[in-house]
Amino acid sequence: MSTSNPLPSAGSWQARLHRYDLAAFQTVAERHWPGAERVLPRLSRSANHGVLWFGAAAGMAALGTSARSRRAALRGVASLALASAAINTVAKKAVRRERPILDLVPVIRRLKRQPFTTSFPSGHSASAAAFATGVALESKGWGAVVAPVAAAVAASRVYTGVHYPSDVLAGAALGIGAAFALRGVVPTRGQLPAPGRPPAQAPALPAGEGLVVVVNRASGTATATAGLVRDALPLATVMECAPSDLAGCLAEAAERGTALGICGGDGTVNLAASVAATHGVPLAVFPGGTLNHFAYDLGIEAVHDTVMALTAGDAVRVDLGRFRPGPDGPSGPDGYFLNAFSLGVYPELVRTRERWAPRIGGWPAGVLAAYEALRGERPLTAELQGRRRPLWLLFVGNGMFRRVGPAPGRRHNLADGLLDVRVVHGGRTPALRLLAAAVAGPLTRSPVHAAVRRRQVRVSGLAEGTPYAYDGEVAHSGTELQIDKVPEALSVYCPRPV
Image (cartoon, rainbow, N blue to C red; front, side):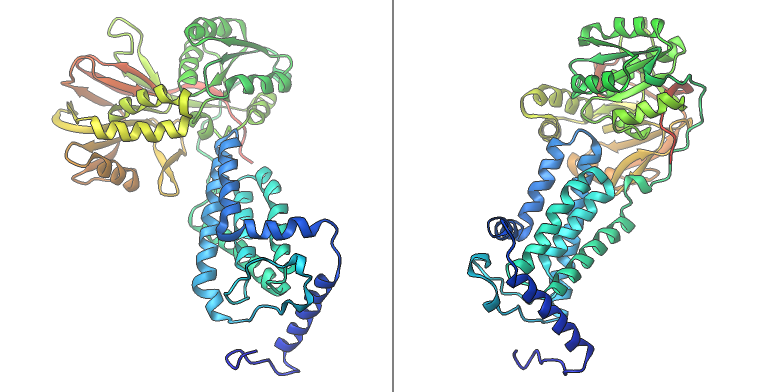
């Protein structure tokens, strides 16, 4: 030991702890662990600089079938970053403990490159524990997958001789603490209060008896989800339809069944909602698209959630957003939206995303579409609530959007009778203006953007054929639009909060 790190006196608690620590370290070093020589040193190296965990997060986001997987991956990485910052800026400088002597460790176990930082606490263990805990706080399933790997990484630090056991335990404790500290600042989805939704009368349909489910073959993961629906609800009728046949299939299903089921993305669910509301039957939503905003706001993230609601007969009433004239013009029916209606750059973003998504995937296509839309568009000019102005974006949400972290996210009430209206005014730097609006959130005003709540919105002075988007679908307007709501127009099966 150097003079800057003197040995504790023989009778002190630090000395006793060091003796126990050294004894445990020697036990690990002297014991033969079958097969570990090949696995643990490589696993330990793979976790350098968090590479193992960044790869795991990317795999979870790519392979996961729900938004929960993406949230778990993001929270795991954020927890790791917080733990790493705490370890490297405070903990390692506060306790300057030297690394164990490697004489007791067999050469085959030792790392090719020995770490040069102080020993206490273990940064690898902190990162592993933080990532695994962050993932588990959002998704117990993915947490169960990641936890054994995290435990093996922590154990490998003692096995390879670079840390004492207490270094690993302290690092793991700090990592777990970092994940929970982050949860205190940015709540997990499960921590948020259950959205306020008035209950609706709906029949219980165990095993799916009386349910007719329409599947949009072209929506995201709908075809795979349809197989899960058949397994979980053997008495349900499942109809797979091409996009061009959806309207006819939905009308037939609503007339045949006690309830109408739909499997697809937000645009498909939008069409099913208008049919269910017209025929007066409850709707069962099975998320099978890319984003599935409406299903997630109901608390439905998997087929199992909808199956539970159908079995128990649990349902709620929700509002329908409405715009007139609808997509077919003044002579056609009204248009409806479950999530949002928008004018400005967003419709062009949707069209570009839909063009590229089959080639490069949904999320990369969304990034490319945002870049293209912001680079090439000019603000539209319209008269909004009697005042003419240039606009980059008019967003009208069906219900008030709340926050999950730094961006608008979940709606806490799907039957509040309100429209969440957000306007980004015209001017230079549309990207910065849109970002400022997203960060500022609901119920704010500035020279760049405004966010207010309304019961109806009137837009006039539009150029004929101006594109607009509703629930991910794109249509073209006449010279004016009237946007309002139909309160509690739809009954939807929804799992009861626990």
